[in-house]
Amino acid sequence: MRTIWFLTGNIGKLKEATYHLQPLGYTVRQLIVKEGALIEPQADTLEEVAQSKIAQALSHLPGGEQSEDMILVEDAGLFIEALNGFPGVYSAYALKTIGNNGILRLLQHLQSQDTVQCAQLRSAEFQAVAALWMNGKILYGNGKCPGWIALESSEGEGFGFDPVFTPNDLDSDGEPLPHGEYGEKSTHGKTFGALSLEEKQAYSHRSRALNDLLRQLPSS
Ligand code: IMP
Image (cartoon, rainbow, N blue to C red):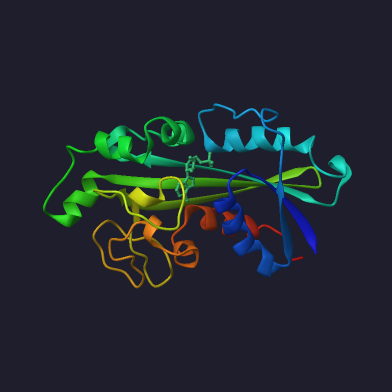
């Protein structure tokens, strides 16, 4: 079994990656870097952030750069259409400062009795980039999850923006449909926060980014 060291402090992300990679024969372990030893890069794109994280993680890889092990980093953001893509690459900062309630307040004026119109007004998309370092090379996977910002926050399992994000329905191939179209798979208006980890995977930007990566990986 090859080991993939996932550089993340987020247990929710670790669980999601393990869910995908373990059945394929990879052991996923958390790469823990001492507080303050990792600089959260501020860049314009998720790819640049991921690349910088890989470069920093390399010096912490057990066994060093000659190791057969791999390093996984993942970077995601929530891009809200009415806010010109904000918070995007600033998502972690926005969550820490204004939080989900702040996001709801920023969109307070965007409401409609018509649910399709409401979803369009509050349209948002999660984007994720997963980057895997192996034998000196970096592979990138991309994933998106279109949806909208709910009118209120919901309690549940997830993390981050999960309580305020509702994904669009999926067609029979598991691909996202436009706002308001009913699909083979639907959360029926529920947010990510109200779904179980397993249910979230069908929609998740991270699982799409990981699957995109997996398509490029040799089987273990
Ligand atoms: P990160 O930089 O990839 O950790 O993500 C930026 C911010 O987006 C963090 O505050 C995460 O909590 C949030 N985020 C990333 N992915 C998700 C998700 O699947 N659900 C909810 N929030 C997320």
